[in-house]
Image (cartoon, rainbow, N blue to C red; front, side):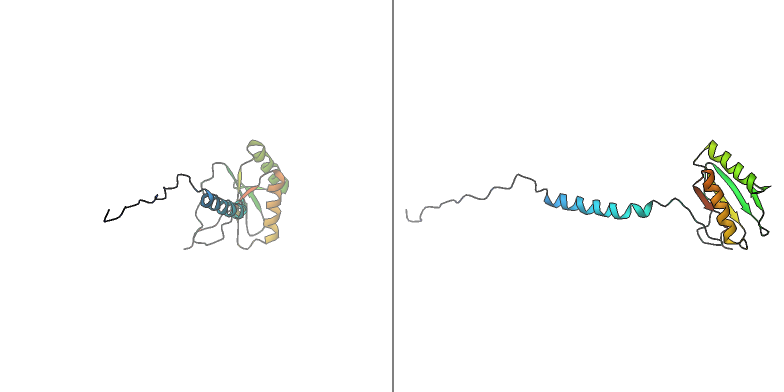
Length: 138
């Protein structure tokens, strides 16, 4: 044979197994991201500051309105009440539905201590969802 014999070498065959190592690496990274971000998303207290851009009314299916005027008077659903009546009204609302939201409307000049007292009364009654109501900027 003048041209020689053409020998064919065996060509490597394609790999038929799936390499799952990159998939496991990606899934572990996603689990770590989820573990880090989950506690940050579990905030139950919504705050709306007075005259803020994001201060728009929230749609709440069930809520109780608590108001505080400049003199420190308390209003439950726009009716003047004392501290005992407030506690009784809030506990009745909690008894009806524990997921009831307290929408707190306080004048800017009300001392922070008075606002904390009303928040404490709501939490003592069993209402944990408290929202601060504010007006949008002019």
